[in-house]
Image (cartoon, helix red, strand yellow):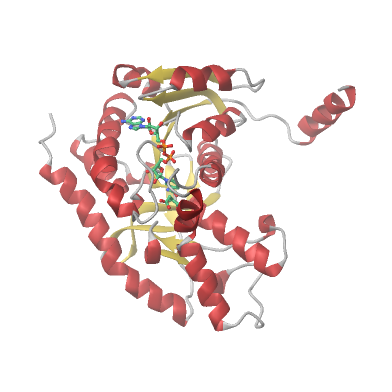
Length: 341
Ligand SMILES: NC(=O)c1ccc[n+]([C@@H]2O[C@H](COP(=O)([O-])OP(=O)(O)OC[C@H]3O[C@@H](n4cnc5c(N)ncnc54)[C@H](O)[C@@H]3O)[C@@H](O)[C@H]2O)c1
Ligand SMILES: O=C(O)C[C@H](O)C(=O)O
């Protein structure tokens, strides 16, 4: 025990604690992603207050997480009447609320339920923490982010610099699979993943991987690797056999994304991250996941996608129609709804 304390003291000296100064609200906190993400956020040195909101089971999750001996104050909020208090003063709102896939379903099959859930939560954000950064995990991300933007726009509080669709899991997977292939630590791998978050709209740019894929990796292997990254969500859905989709890797990815946001908010920039945002990165596609430079106010610059090889360029063209269809579906969902109050 004494040895452990000594090691912790040395570690905190090497990496001095950051000021815990941000309130993070997690909506869907009692779910498969929400619970491990609550734990990881409670471990963040940037979080002073962690608001755990769900329509079920938050008292138990909040009581459990609050016993961790880390800095963040934890409070659970249950049901719609407690949502305003959960959101008040939030700097960052992370949203994994909604239903997950079962085998045989596409992410778009979740639209009918999750579109309404996201719309309702974003209306509350517009009313109670309109300047918060918002990170949407709920699927289909290709549509839920446009839904959120339309709701915020109607409420007169949209700032596209602060609205993100979380695609970090695609980047995390690409790093893991390339690391596995090259026999190197995934933490030493970087792979840009751009586009959207469903099937062929997920575009890993393996030609820009670092370390680069050696010439011994055949075009067939490259193609298979690209397909595995694109289908990795389905790989997990099938392995879980009806009990849900990725939760633990997603919580890891979301914690990493939240950390980047909070680092940028702290002024520790420039921070580079990938996310699905409203941008002019690709002509004709109002939303696209790109490399971003984040600063105190959100997205400071949408960085160029860089060069693509032949396979990537073909995939880039092939995804455009599907991505645009998903964007339009989200925009129309809000347009068909009741006019803003
Ligand atoms: N972006 C990504 O990379 C990614 C990765 C994995 C999962 N997902 C998506 O994340 C979502 C959640 O997945 P999960 O495995 O945690 O599901 P889950 O069913 O385990 O948890 C969802 C939680 O949302 C809550 N919820 C439902 N309606 C709500 C509302 N109106 N307000 C607040 N909370 C509400 C539920 O009570 C539940 O606790 C799914 O849509 C899934 O497809 C996205
Ligand atoms: O695949 C899913 O349905 C969940 C998530 O989008 C994922 O990529 O794991």
